[in-house]
Length: 305
Image (cartoon, rainbow, N blue to C red; front, top):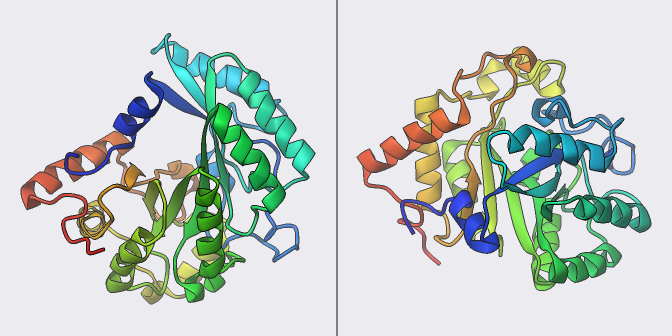
């Protein structure tokens, strides 16, 4: 391992070829939008922030994948692809409809696996039975939106599930032999720096393979943006330099074998209620690498099992 476990290197080791994820919007909703566990969705959420132009529900899974392939193939003609079921909760439907969408994606030429983004409270046993079989014939990652390990935060952001449900979902999925990714937001209101760093220790106790981090961004039209304007003191929006040092402190406490897929998310500036950093992802990672070198830091340095 170098200074941290990089996703790109790991993915090449797993699949043996250069691979790109293509985001899909398969027309799902969420149980905290449709009333099953809540309404209004997570207070920070606006799915426009991570859906590319080709990723709209009026297009079939196949069409979205083919358009995504055309976009990336201009630069990398030999690229293979993972179908990334990203928007909303991608296990929240009848089992037969879920199977049809996953299988459609895998039938597209050069698609060699799938990544399924979902919530910890939306993984029934019958679906796990199917995913266990699917995992034996293709590359599969189930990515759980954890967002926070603290129940008080999950309640405040209208997440609609508990940390205990997160632990149960991850444990049950890994028990089927399926790789699990986790998604965590750093900087949610009410969480101190010490609480954020403690999340690294809690997450390290779970059998996750992959981790995505990103900074809190405030999106126009969301309830969290309104909360911010009403109570600025309850929020801390990091500068790039502050966030880089936080990320380094976090990953030094992280289990050494976890694969780090992402550190930031840069939403379109037109959607931001508070101006962003104006940094592209690769520019942020370059700065992170330089700071890691300056600090002689590396993933797991402060980890204690």
